[in-house]
Length: 537
Image (cartoon, rainbow, N blue to C red; front, side, top):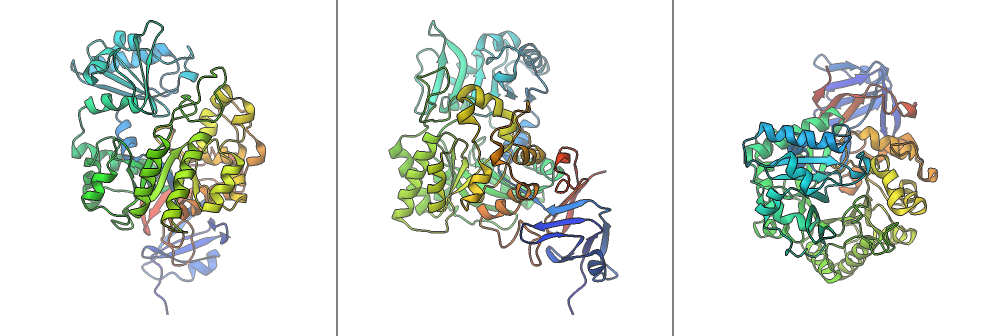
């Protein structure tokens, strides 16, 4: 006779997975799913010590997996200056917030801010160095665009970084000048590295607090597992130490797959030399991937395209690496056993990525490595077919359709923008597009991505290729079982079948039955390893 469950959830709608269907109740024993079934069947399993939770019609799902976000940077930005369109819809409001932060800080202290989108500012352009100088004359200011690939610096920040009109942009970088040859303050991609190096490094406690802060924010949305998609990007190897410290102190609220930043300026080589290997860790914290940047963002016109951007025939974006450099990095990390997670948004960057991955796989075959292309936004049909043949998985951010879809139309035209992030096409090709937020680039809230996959609507209501719409169940699977698949953990999590890890999210509304109510729902409970990790008041 099997032991009684430690926890049962009854009288609701339990979505167990695409193949498992919907049930009324679920039983948990320790950190594993014991059974799913009707309320009567599950209630009959309970013993004297079983905790009982009445779902009262609420929807329970596998705990959500955000397959590409930046947990530690998210936690850091949660205490930095918010310049998102909601907080600063106009240039004047943006500059006032910077001036107010300057008034709070001692002279010489850095102002770190993030989230503006020039396309949504009233002036329709980036802030300038001179405007930041007037708002913060006595502080170095580093203002990052929403995409995370473009930043504006004031004169103090440029001086501390050693950048002036004689500076030459590195490979894959842009230092913008005006018609007179004077720096505007705009830096893109690798050209930002000197400024980032000049910003004082955070302490270990600040890093641990950021991990914990962001992890708890994840739980409040029903997200129980994430991939931190560039560990080392903010503080180098110190981030690995901070993650270990957070885990040891019980301050790691969610499961984390560590994707080490590779390539120029990354930590992958140093970590490998220090003994880090794929699979280091446990089910709560594990090193798995290495990330390579190949291009930038479409909204910033730095995503590498084979065709030019609208209105700028000389602009096709930026490739961060030469073809030879990309092949070399990819081969080395592949041979070391890492799963590659390559940032490639434009189709030219996707070409470069697929060429490098195919060469690496030919040299050291591994038919189930499941290398990944992160974002994979402007993918051509021939590239999707090639990905399916090579078993290379896309990891998109459907929320980009909502937040940036209108901007994509503006910079690329409707015909090129509409089929971007083609969830249905990928699935029909046999791929497993794992949904994610890319937070803090976009809001952590998974409802935006769920709605975008179901409706393909942009922020203004424009529909981008309704043929790529998917059902609510498939959209949810992209945040659960597909997220587990790209992590090679489909046998352990992502579904609520007996024996699987008991990671569960509970929502107020059944958006599977009422997809128009995705935005109305809220996460009321998150369960990790069979224990309640978050419960709304």
